[in-house]
Length: 183
Image (tube, rainbow, N blue to C red):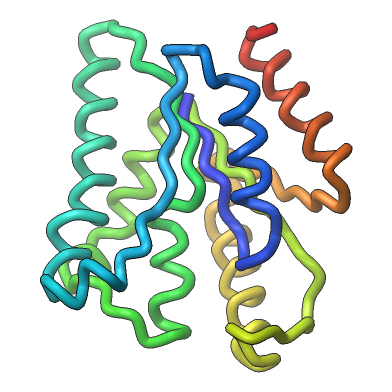
């Protein structure tokens, strides 16, 4: 199963990711992936995103496709963000997306839809600017996530979440445990 935690900054993705990590730390069938702070790598190699970030997602989807085609059961993957974030953020903040990826984003979303997956779309309070995002940018980010949800809610398993407290997050992790057949 692919579990992807998505949503605007400060919505609780990394908090929830760390709770999953703590819960499944000894389970060898669960793999965890967090995004790199890729600005460091971009300074050294302007093509880093194209060669690594996007390439990694494509490689993972291809691997899962081949693994499941042969009847093997791949490990569970839990992601703190995914290529979906880049689809959302890049046009808003002027971040580079390789042209070939932009043209094929729908293709990769279709590939993702073929696997046992769930995209948990974490929501947060709107209109609270901080040191990173001004009010107008936040509105655009929220609107882009809403648009993504409305476009793909029938194609992908997308579950909107609003984790107000750590207790809600702990209950959520326990629920996923039960759903996935883990104790």
